[in-house]
Image (cartoon, rainbow, N blue to C red; front, side, top):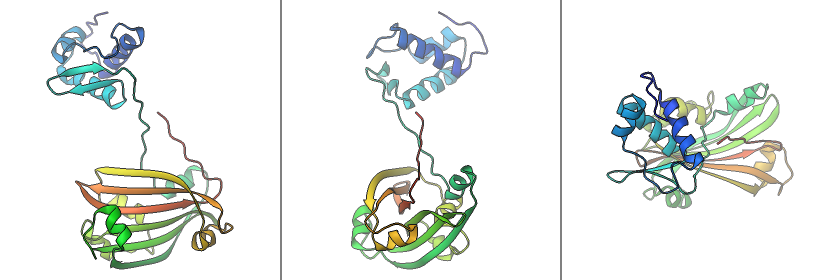
Length: 234
């Protein structure tokens, strides 16, 4: 059905496009009308149409290719979206009282395994920071983080005794790409001591690498205390 409302929003267009896909009016693998034709149909600008289609592509319903047009995906590819949270916010969202403690912080040459993981040059300088995050007096997360000095030179003057490295990075440097991994590891003697767990206990573990315009910024490993829950919506 053609809409003639001059105040048509991109949300209205998204809803109509989705309705046509779900009803079968626009079949899987079929091409949508071009943006100019849709703009005429919806009595809006091409910019409004472009935003609606771009968001539907980001959400996994459409495929957009330059010069080839916009096509309905045969199998919608829903994407889970993650933000990089500050541990302080996670604890306070639970109604708890956040507390931070620095374990160690020192500048050193990157170990071989980190050079391989981040494609660093041999002996490149990094800052290694280990710290604890608490909910009140209860361990919440043990963080083991490496920060590439060449990508974030101001890290050499950072005061990690008063602010956690994750919180400092969010405030200091942007990122363009993130790699997230989640795994169940077993607590070694050090992790077990920090999280008050038996040695060898399974631990929910997150690994995160961030880049800025292709340059590695940080590699972090986060070990969570028993009872931690991660939830995402998509």
